[in-house]
Image 1 (tube, helix red, strand yellow):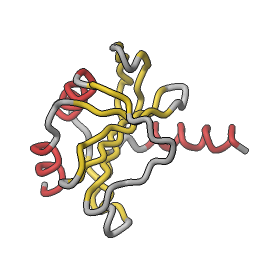
Image 2 (cartoon, rainbow, N blue to C red):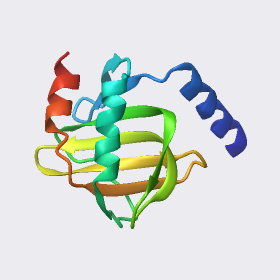
Image 3 (cartoon, helix red, strand yellow):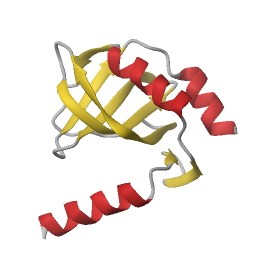
Image 4 (cartoon, rainbow, N blue to C red):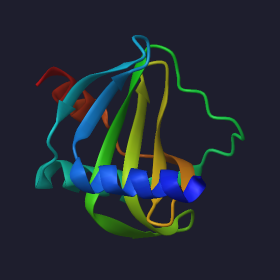
Length: 130
């Protein structure tokens, strides 16, 4: 069953590498848009600025925010003190009430929740309104 789910997830990623904006309060995707080299570059800046791992065992999204799913094409190799993996998908977890975090998915389907220094606010404003 797990192998079937993982295969289905991989197929869907290959078919639909779109960015999805999920409004946490509304509990639904409010926008789907195409990625671009510019967006991939912004995500790389975030990944290069990772400065810690969120050690929470149970992840709960913050209230009044968004989660933005950003598939990486091609996947990016990140090597620093906290992450040494090939990242295939990033979820930006953004709320005005909490520090932004990244939920990272590796090519091997490992998941990591990390903090980063770069400011994603301009990206969130741009992607949420365009």
